[in-house]
Image (cartoon, rainbow, N blue to C red; front, side, top):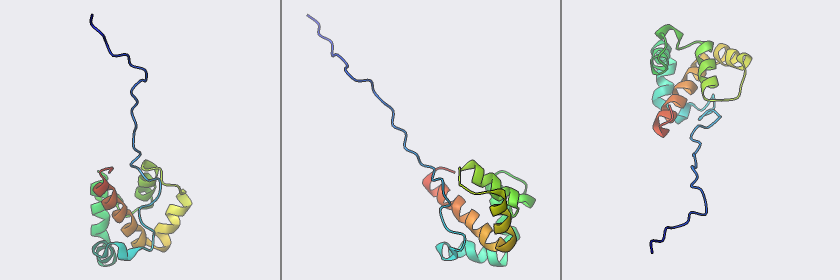
Length: 112
């Protein structure tokens, strides 16, 4: 007599949520990555181009409020257009550095 195993439970897929719906670092967390901080301070256009390149956008868009908003929306980071505008207007170097640090951290986690 051939006996077959009876399955009592359905297999389930557990998806680990890798995306963090927050910025990986704070706006003023410059010491988190000194290389990015120095590049943002002395060569913000280069940092903007690195950001745009990572996001497959035009190099001229890297240091814009729109780029920050697109990135924030893509990863579900809470905020507003006004917040993005204020960050880019009042702290442009810090906002660029935060965006680049976030991209780097998400690349390291494999979710960029």
